[in-house]
Length: 524
Image 1 (cartoon, rainbow, N blue to C red):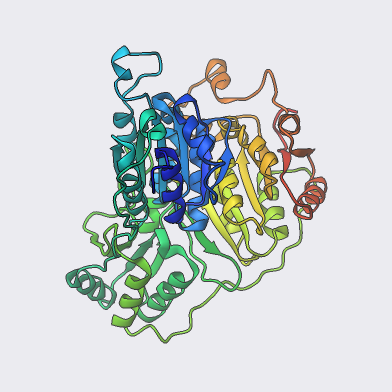
Image 2 (spheres, rainbow, N blue to C red):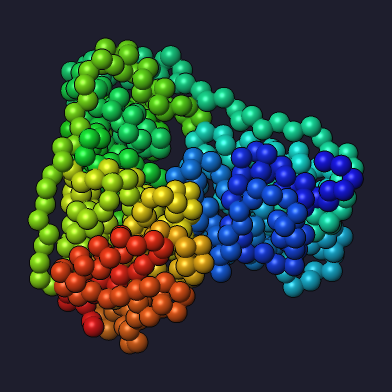
């Protein structure tokens, strides 16, 4: 690295050499050396987010589509804390992210100045690897390790904490670098044996898939196994990315509600997990089960976290004699556009019908999103990205990151109105970076999913005070005006025809656009 490089410049060079080319940033004083290094070291695109939740959510969306990490640049303990919610979603999506967190100069923490905090403790809640750098000479090796850790299957969160003096000090004795990630593994032979035995038993078998098993090629391999054995397959409810559309193998998701989930699995004798968790309710409800599987079901966890899911499905298909079969794919379906007043289902139908080939759907529509799958069979091929960790406020930033990863593709963000307000600042970043994102706000003016949850937890008698906690009125929010104030062209629609016209316009132009879909029955 040479005497002419300080720690920050060395860090940028190391990241770029390791394939990390995008940094989502919200820097402060402790990170200024890194900011200055961006003008001295070529190869890193730095994208400003106006809130740390935008920064971490964008890194999540980028990694889901790029299959490699971006880095985030966060300011001390409070900055990291602001970004933790979307790091939670990224961790649940099992994607690679590298967090760079500035720290006070070594020795300064004894002053207990206002921004002092326990960064390692905060980072540990959402990271699989955390390290505090101690000298400029260590930065390159530490950054290389962060890259290796993040790229370990299925994708991990790594956090490197950088005291300010390690960034401004000169590098004198840099260590050799090693970027190679650990090799992916395959399940142990005994696990394959258990899965094959169940598949050949003639009894009811359900394969639950998640992670990279939900890409087009492994889904095709899973469908061959279904054809050969008579098993069923389903995706777990929350997944980082699913490749869908006409010409690809269709897969349903585990139902969202406990009762529907229990009903789905009630006849399952064997349940094989491939990149998935044990099917369970998202919350614990009075007098309802936590797990969706019937008593006595034979649970077979075929894979470990570091297993190659594509190779696993190929091996499983080979063992049951299914590799040469032709998979059954989703057939194209022609749909007429609905008319009249705008409903949530109508927004889904029109969006699914008009979206161009190879769109990226980012779904944080919460309640309405549960209907997207049945309403979008046989449509143009697309990637489906969803809220994975349940921490709302991911949709707008995730769409931002996905658009940066795939600049030639259209990103359509199906966005709940309440959750949009958590990270609405992402619209500004979309405008600044000229990103091809169409944001559709389901303006029903309330946290509709929480109103349903009142009934689910048995709180059936509620009145005006509870209603005020779950509605977004008095005053009403004008999302179109908010978008315009951040440089994004926007308009409102309250009929199906108007919405379809706006969507065609938005999809036919470059750059971001927001449509406020005013759902019938909500307050104007």
